Image 1: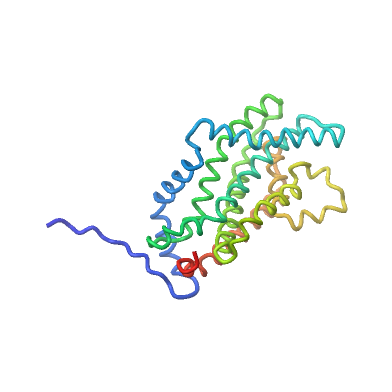
Image 2 (image 1 turned 30 degrees about the vertical axis):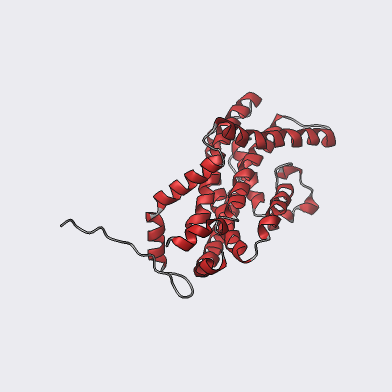
Length: 277
């Protein structure tokens, strides 16, 4: 007789946090499922088609063109650096916005999976982050071409973009995990999310650079976690300058705080999802 295949059972917990070591171990073992689940979602969004990938690039690119024209008309002057800043920041902002829009309904849309399969529910919003990242990748190559055409400076400081993207993913994943859990209890948050992301767009240094902000409006920096992150991104990929260390540390602190709190809130509520979705 052959050796029996071991069966892994995901045991629900009664209250509070689950056994974290076992939970993270189980989550890591399911990484192939996360990859396959993310691939399925990308397929549904026509990411594997030429026109699907073109639209991912055209959407923020056309928006940057529209906003740039408005800035020129209203401001009366502009230059290639400003257009490079606008486009680069829109691309990174869309990475985070797509993570939130995909994550907010990740738990509720996985209703059948939750009811019929035992697995760490955290996999669902994490899959949304993976999908958003793969949708972000084509925009990197387009921006590299665009900045070459614009003749923007090139330097080793551009490598700062790598940790900045990782911080952006960590922060947006934390928010996605948090709002995916909240959406289980208050479904209207999914309808509010587009207004929230639009408000962040206008209050973040995307349509304008931090150097142009008025002194009396500097308080925006304290309440907007995207402020130091996008400023660091612009300095690295547009100006080829090293970002301020303070901005990087503040961005990292925001990302770790939001991810930790969002994950904690999600895990202590996870056991209720099956009866609420």
